[in-house]
Length: 216
Image (tube, rainbow, N blue to C red; front, side, top):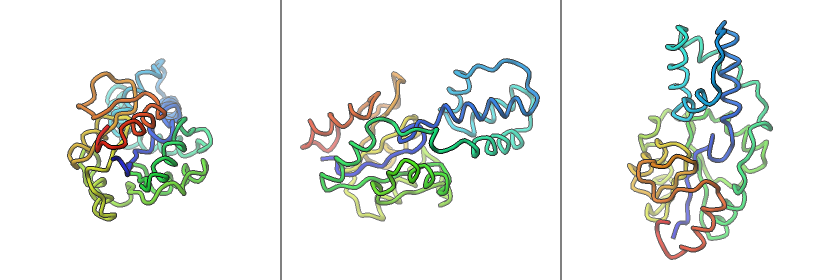
């Protein structure tokens, strides 16, 4: 039975991509890019990683990647946490896990201060037992280090742990950690995730129906 969920944050708990795209577009405008840049293209780049998006944009428009990234961070940090909304179904799924005697965790590439601001703004910090953020210095996903730290720190049975995320690197990290995985998004083929959902309510129903199973 799945009793523990290790969540990704941006794009999984919180709908952060509209704000990320907006910040990148503002940055390009600030740096003098006069071309019309497709929001969908920037979104697709950002869903691979923020660093990847910054690098591709810098190469495309002949900009300094470090300057672009720094300006992006300045723009993004000005966007209120209230505008980066909580995905529907988060609270219900977190409450189900807690009611089942389990725990919720977060493994994210975000800085700790940014994560806490989002959690407290949306009043869900109390659902999470622990989290590992960028500040801890562990390798980025798909390296499983951040997941393994949580598992080892709390002595979790790997057969009862599910990692959920919106990117392939989240799934690859979960697989490398030897735990179940769930892809949350619309991509068709994502590294063989154990389950794929487009809404968190779908995952909740899967877990309720498969309470005797270790993986959905």
